[in-house]
Length: 149
Image 1 (cartoon, rainbow, N blue to C red):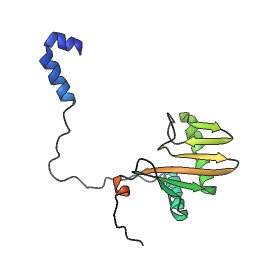
Image 2: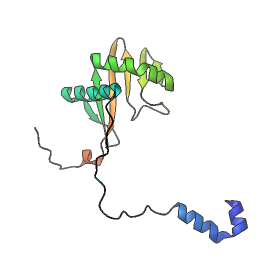
Image 3: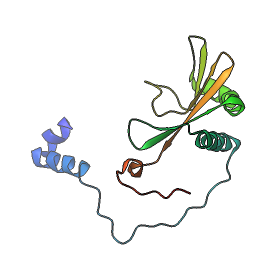
Image 4: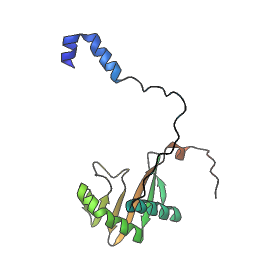
């Protein structure tokens, strides 16, 4: 950038930096609500949906601290199957951690902490999996009336 300022003068540098920070254009017309074509669910996708279904049936759902994310917890045979399936993937991405007799397997590379990352843990033969789902701010809206079915 210094060479641009020296060669072209200060006004060009100001223009270039203004372009880089310009606001997003205002959309024209209505948003496109066309559903894109989907792909068949994989076996891994069924692990996620099974964990979410089990968590829903047992009431094992919590909100994450960001307010727009839900945490689903499943256990037992389903969690063991999920844990086993994560094994090769976690090893491949270097995201399996053994600590205090527990083995953690993460679905993404663990960088700082486990916040917002799906994982399974084996502890003395018991298995637990955590599935994180971003849902948006509606989850936090006070006074929303949700019919009970």
